Length: 269
Image 1 (cartoon, rainbow, N blue to C red):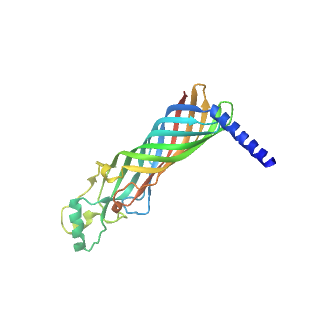
Image 2: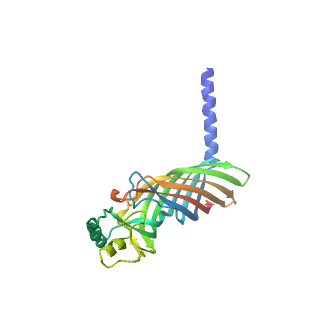
Image 3: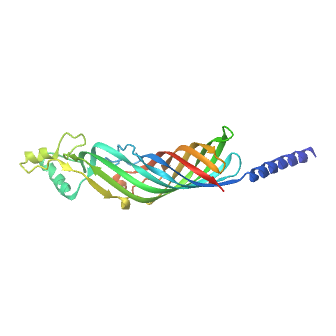
């Protein structure tokens, strides 16, 4: 009899909690905007073409729908424009164009055995723009009557909008990755016309070389200020793509990822 009474008390308590939580369900919609600090992380396959990327800056923001199921728990989904990618500076590997490929094939005649790349001292920037759709669970803690702190995390789907690689600068062309042996030294030795400094100002559309879909994880921590009709928030977070971006492993593989800082407003309805 005591056991049945205990189960009844537990069940009654749970029902009361669920009832009170259901009465506090709130719906929000809004937008946010800010910036991301993305980078391309070299994955399990590396070549001279996909190493040594550093962070760049890009826009990050979008629209939000949120349901708060209780005082602490809720769910948020977003549709964000996310600029991913990375930069490389200094001496770096470049694919051989057809003209250089023929010249590279002749280098063993001059006692030089090159690898499959040419090298130049330039700047290059990979820019990959995605539509990212995360679905996150959210946990909120009250800090003051109007101020709250929250944590949120969950998976996201990324849809590639476009991808390009931008190079800039002028440089001599080198045979080696250390930049010690310029191709002009070999040409001059063979009494052939030299190439000299070359301009590398070029924008290449690489959308066809990149997977159109990605999935990953996303999370953020932030502060929200209740303004009656809605709430103003400021948050910092990050995302990471689980699928390497390259279709062809011959160019190595890289994963997208970014730290983000955004501010926005959610209207309650």
